[in-house]
Length: 295
View 1 (cartoon, rainbow, N blue to C red):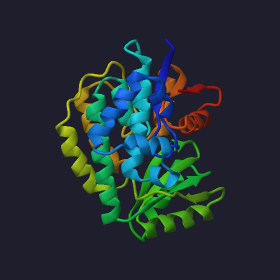
View 2 (spheres, rainbow, N blue to C red):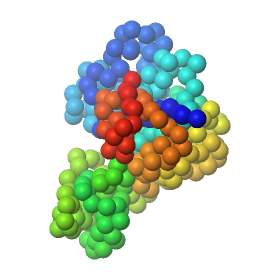
View 3 (cartoon, rainbow, N blue to C red):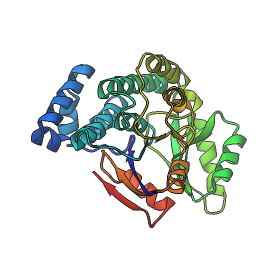
View 4 (tube, rainbow, N blue to C red):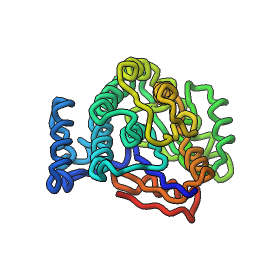
């Protein structure tokens, strides 16, 4: 049976004005935005609607903003929204969990904000960076990371075939970039990020988030969620919790998620929230013929 997947973006999909149209046209959206402002203790809606790029790129703003944008879009689809499968890229996994009714909007937002603050602190305590490696096979990049002597660097985001993001200490990432550029066809692009996400340098943030996850109610989802850590579909709430615990220090297996979804019968993808461009682009690089839309 053919299936439709709903997928949710992470950091990088934010834009000024996000959600303003929903706030102004829907009482449901307005109520959820105001509830979010209350939960967070500041008016994130004002930053989303009118903030500049510099304000929006702060981790403590970006993560809850994208979560709010995606999950309110789902709320506006109504109670008849029944996805076949869902997945989210990094932060987007929390939006996917709300879409699958595994966690509530309120609990999801609290977790996302705790995650953002914990990641921000980890970035300050353990400075690091990330870089996109283009044009090399995954195994080649993995081998380069293993050979680096300057510090910790690991594969962080398997985004699509030929694009693997690495993460780690500044010196180690620079060494890995230079090694990758020496390989035939290899390119390396430093990313403007606050730290070494999805690497061991996020260990303290992961410990903090694990406590928050432990105190959050997880229900059985209404559909399988393909999780970042494994790339596989999961419906067991206890396993979903465990995989979510491991997400901050493990790579995002987005390529594997897309390939597994397609192998399992998914024939169309809808990107929910953010600028609507990031995940559609990655999906097309996995399968050019795949139908993709955005809301």
